[in-house]
Image 1 (cartoon, rainbow, N blue to C red):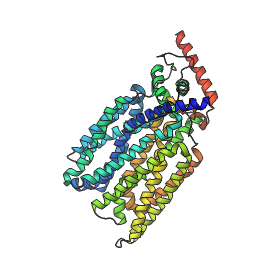
Image 2 (tube, rainbow, N blue to C red):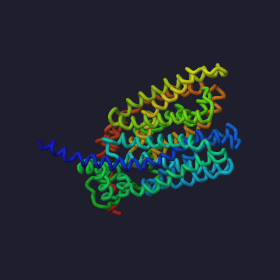
Image 3 (cartoon, helix red, strand yellow):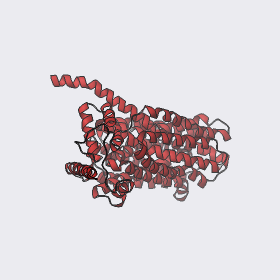
Image 4 (cartoon, one colour):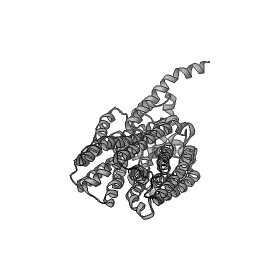
Length: 510
């Protein structure tokens, strides 16, 4: 009876702390709105940019897809920046850089200036896409981490929907003005984000890495279900950071190896990783690769072109159906947020990818039929194209979309997390760039239906990879992930603690 009363008494505090962590996750995840908005708005703005600037299909492909390559700069710079100045201020960097890029695109007078704006915005997108999931994962308790770390993907989809709605809202403006307003108004969420960031606490794991134990403890007490859980999380983070469990204080000196630093992180992750770290890296890179190589950007970025190929004519109709894609993505990503910690990562991922394969085959079939009857508008085939597209984005949004960021932010050890996530995002952006910059050319080479058959084959290979290589991570703390990939948890903790104590002894004798 007493234990029941105690649990009941703790419940309000637990709910309050989850709410606080949720608010922090929401504010950080707003950095992903800028990525989503750019993806969504370019799908419609491209129609008017091509007409106004009189550019070729190849130039249009480059304009749309090049931002993914530019974002690589932001991803790797974000990893270094976040380790040096903190996760929170790195979010401010992302917002400011994209704000400048959005204004440059909005005031562009020619193709060259537009590409400069895309470059600046791309760096901001890279910063935001890297830091939001890392911050959210590090501040979330294990029991609700899947829910909270899916927020970045939720906000990407919200940004996509806002981009589609912007297309539809400003489509009636004069040709030379409409697309510029669509792109320039993207500066608004960046300005809001920069202001909200100062209400966020710093990541407790980054604070521990800097030896600020008192500050980390204060954040953990606000984001944990109980003081006991906060103390346990702090102890685990200290071991992961190389600080002995019995070393305490408000501010402590974090022991470092003689050759520690950025080069050591690169060595441990890329140059000479252990078998377990190599498997973690392969899992992260593979997940990001298949997320993009399955054609999600082709569906989202070029949905007006896909629907035009299906027989839908008129800019308003095209943009209206495209808005339906955005609504579907947003609704199903919200469903996914509530299932991640209840169902688990693997079941959702495998169901999602299997559904995507079927949807892509269906879409490819419908578009092939349309291609063989170019002069005949077959209502049932048009309906199948729309239904297949909506089914694809629904399956993508309920699994592969959000789980990629969630999983990648969970599995890397603390010291390698920022760089590991940046490597995953780099693979994601490079693959996205290749897909988005080749879709129109690929469609001309093997037909638009053939393109989606190709994507379905890649997604099928991805399903096999996920089934064989990715373990379930639901309910595990970030510090427990190692043993899922072959690192003995107990042995590692003892080794890390012993090594950390030895480092302190070394430092005290110098």
